[in-house]
Image 1 (cartoon, rainbow, N blue to C red):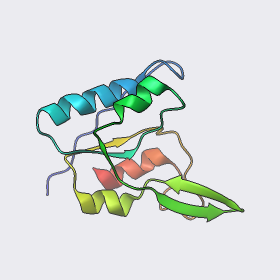
Image 2 (cartoon, rainbow, N blue to C red):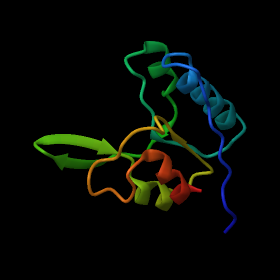
Image 3 (cartoon, rainbow, N blue to C red):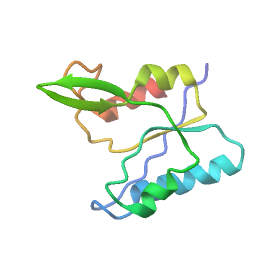
Length: 113
């Protein structure tokens, strides 16, 4: 199997539109017939960003309980099993829950590629 390709949306500060741009690109790819899923996309309460998630299949998160709180993490096994052409992964700087395969979300990307 051929290794995937990584496209990163960067911004100088929170709220500049990285997630929005990623979702717009996802809809463009869907329009071309590509198989796109959301592994994790956070709208941060922005209604315009939330609206762009409509029509994009979301892979359910892996639910982890730690220290009495419930955390939601990317379910890497489910995304890999689903085998989409494109997987959207937001918040690469996120620290994964204890017991996860990797400490940081950006490290999870290697599994998906």
